[in-house]
Amino acid sequence: MDFLCVNKDKIVDYITTSGTMGNPVTFGMTENDLNRLAHNEYLSFLCANGSNKDIYHLMVTLDRRFMAGLAYFLGLRKLGAGIVRVGPGNPELQFDTIKRISSTVFVTIPSFLLKLIEYAEKNNIDYNNTSIKSAICIGEPIRDSNFQLNKLGKKIKEKWDIKLYSTYASTEMGAAFTECIEGKGGHLSPEMLIVEFLDENDNPVNEGELGEITITNIGVEGMPLVRFKTGDICYHFKEKCMCGRNSLRIGPIEGRKKQMIKYKGTTLFPQALYDILNDIYGVENYIIEVSTNNIDTDDILVKIGSNENGENFEKIIKDHFRAKLRVAPSIKFMSPFEITKLQYPAMSRKPITFIDKRNDYQTVNV
Image (cartoon, rainbow, N blue to C red):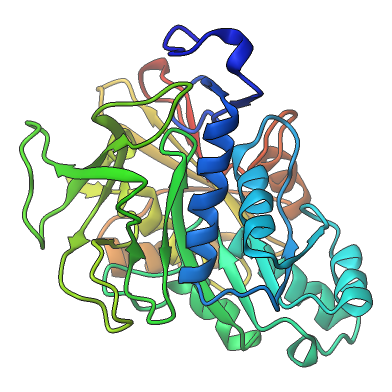
């Protein structure tokens, strides 16, 4: 709270970041900041073809000092849509809620949709004939750099024929980049942010070049930020979208600057590993650990939750990595239950899939 720009009695809500890149940071928000947050999500839901006739099924938390759940709730109130606050987890409750209330749009981490599909298939639920028509996907990318569905997005769409919308946001921005129906990148709301895309020397990059998202938020009272480096790397696009909007768009996040891995002469971001693991039959869940070895280079250990194991399955997995990345990480098999416990430690608000142990610097990523 060292950067608070108003008297403390003006703060009406306290939130913290998820701690993805280190220790969580606390932010104080004024009444006007909450109104700004509501306006941002109102614009985001409109961009994703939302309307006041929809009933939004929130599979996110509104507690634990989490901004996102509160932001969605406030934005949907402004939109005038129906809201059902189900929270994360518990597939039985999710389907019971759909049956009772006929919700139409999910707001969820996309990988949880696979859990819902798995539960539905085990319990003979015809999930393709429910009231759900679309999902606002948060926290995990569902597209690649060409705007095609990645492995996670494809696995969902192959099973459940609903429209998927991708979003990118952060607590620090207090704003979001949300896809329109064309699915060609997240749209900037110009009244919310000034955004730059910078190289490692803080120079602007051109379209077609990777740059770090750097933001100055507009209209924030409690803790405004000027040229804040998010650490997230992506491409940006300035041409008019087919939806008719002229606003700048960003592509899927290619990786986080601090999470770049140099492994056996190959430069990788965690998402490249996720895409391969999500495409291997028999891999139920996973955690990737990166550490520094005794010669100061990166090592990768993939802990895989699976009911299969053994040398043959390990060879299959490593062959997939070599085919796509030319290198293969170390593999450790565990039960899916054990991996789930590691993914959801106490106080965690998001599933952990990446742990960085390099040089005693700890980070986690979802």
